[in-house]
Image 1 (tube, rainbow, N blue to C red):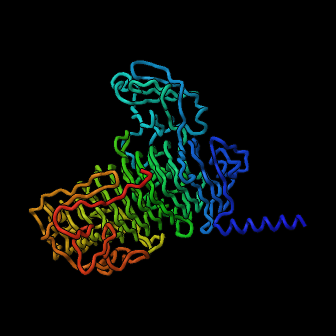
Image 2: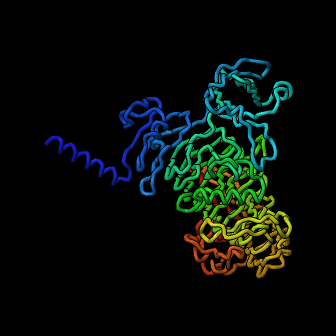
Image 3: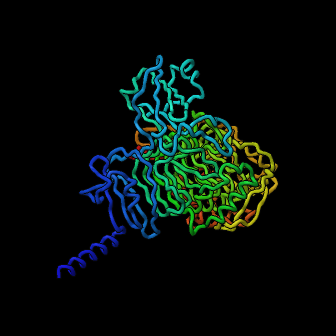
Length: 610
């Protein structure tokens, strides 16, 4: 009788947990736990990885306050209906770091100190023996994946000991040299005794990254993650990030603060194989794509990730990047800043957001500023929408669309960095209701690289095509300084209607029903206040209103023969950047101003985490 009652109780408990959407809840508490414990709230585990080894589909891992210096590598994935959740306990600050605190520094001279570390300390991966290298890296291949931090601030690596001790002793610099059994690090701590401060060094390549691909349906929520010795992540190689999905499906990465990854913060990238970093050409990347198809590159097995409400900063290569693995994903409401500026290496993969083959991807309402480049979609962007993003104070570009065949919809964005945009040699592109400060990069009339186009809403290669200028449209945009005349020489058709050209901005010969305001001299200024970011602009009562643009007006991408229609894209562009309704007519630009004169409006809310 007792046995039957016990079985009935267990069954009731199982049914209750299943109804709540998870099977078991594990707790992790570094200060009070043990990895030999059961893992419940009363007897928590000590490390997150101990929980990662135990979880099954539908399980939840609650991590309590503290600093966890470990690499979390899930070994089991969830399912669409039973994902596995790793979550910081509500209201508690949980840090996961790829670094270790380093003591034992010896004073050398003036501001310079040195520490000698046995190589066994690093295990199988020594970041001070691993350099930045790979396809499309142009400079800085002497730089190591390791870093040195003083009280949370990154010191800058230099290529020689002389440049640190002799010429740079008054600057926060570091240098490393690895021998057979030991690693030596020299660093200038500028008046600080490092043994009395918090000095940390990178030890782990990643912070949250599965060692195997196809670890699906993982949710990661609410952590502070930093200090990863990530490698250079070109599109032809495996792309470990500080946190990354490693060729899988259905991850949700949300509400995290991610910083100080040597290369990339979040990766939705490729698996690794023997061809990694051996494919630096257009033809070789086509082969990379063909091999990906053989490795289940399709909607059933890869992509459909959600990356939202994260703050990502101080990464050397990209805030978010991914080659092939980001298909059908959504990247929204992220704050991305301080990316790629001031690092000792440079290559053609640096941006706030950098994707190869973003098929049917949504990039929405992200705030990208103070980066080397903003949003860069490179190869096979097809069915992609870039909408309601705020970009400003970026050093090179707000937007780069490189050798894509489309369709790519770019609507209701604020592009406020006054630099060049590489957009002319992608086809099937439509710009609707953007406010644009950049100028067009003069890239000629055709790029001869033959790049793939795909079957609509699929990953199967339909063919290869070179990249002639044109098959582009611009409706109801506000140009602050753009010269659109480079489109006059395009090979494929161009349509432009209802655009407003301020000050020095020049219309193309294809413009119809456009307007010029050459007397306009007021800047579009972005400023930060305690509660958010504000745009200051003077609106003229002479600016004309235009007809509402509908999705059917955009036509189709010519080369893949695909329209802009897909799930989630409205039939009419009747909402602006702020979500305000456009009624029977619309002002050009991303914001539907309700009155004339000097306007100061909040354009981005600062989250509580920031």
